[in-house]
Length: 203
Image (cartoon, rainbow, N blue to C red; front, side, top):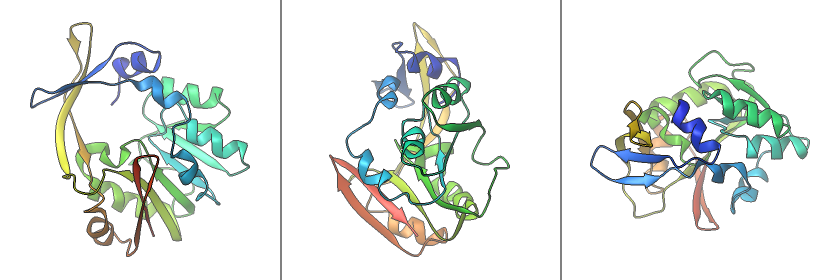
């Protein structure tokens, strides 16, 4: 989710997500500006240098900084990076597949708020994160609830009668995360539920 429409959503604008199958849902991007129930369960697991992938406006990056944990947010949207810095977090305007600092030395990498779907190819994304985290490090990902289906959808953002370009986005079910993790070099996948959200720690 990139571009001017996403930034408009971060400012509280009425932006929608249109799926290729005809579904239309509100983006409601402003929800990422504030703590969300279940965040604490993730933050408590970040004890070393943490890379927040697709950090958005930086609520998790800034929260870790306040706890004294070194954290870096990366996002492809300039306003998201600016908002993270305003909140007291460190952030770079960068794609996860670009060259990144401390490659191979991150203790944790976060994929929150559905960001395991970035690019529509979770396997390629997790293989990239395996390069970024250190031996013994982990990736903490938010996934869909057990019983759901893993999917790849084409979608676009729209606002006020205009639409952005189509892009691919994936969802991963908690039922499928173990096999996916193992294929990508993470032999262990711990799953848990908090405040109605599902997470997995891949290590």
